[in-house]
Length: 213
Image (tube, rainbow, N blue to C red; front, side):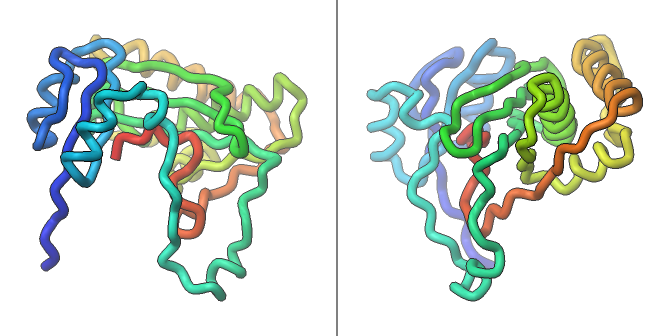
């Protein structure tokens, strides 16, 4: 069994800011903190350097990506269709504080965002992001496609149902109110937008990624 690589966590906004050497320590500083901003790094030096700089230089941006796929596999997959938007969600814990957004695939310009919600899951966020994207594109009469890296969310959207195991409670009511609205939209609207799985192994993280892995 390969040894898990150590990560270092830079927190720009949290109960305490700085570089933390474990996810538990990081989580303690971002839990219940509105608008927490953080990212993991593979070396302490990189994390410390990032702390001194503007978080916008790191959040939502990815470093140069080298695929592990063969040239033949990459050729078969091809390049992303840039006449598209990309959606993604981020959850601090599962369940935990969750948010989602949609961006222009080529420029990474943010087109819409929701959250953070106090209690949610990544799958719910991915589902809501796709539905939000569908409504956004329909409203703008756009022929762009939607990229998502979640097969689960694609399945839920096709079935017009959010098949989450998360139980409803007072804490997550605002989120489930949005889920109910999304399901109602799917049941009462038609759309021609194509929803496509983002090829992470070929292209790297989806452009809408929050950069918190």
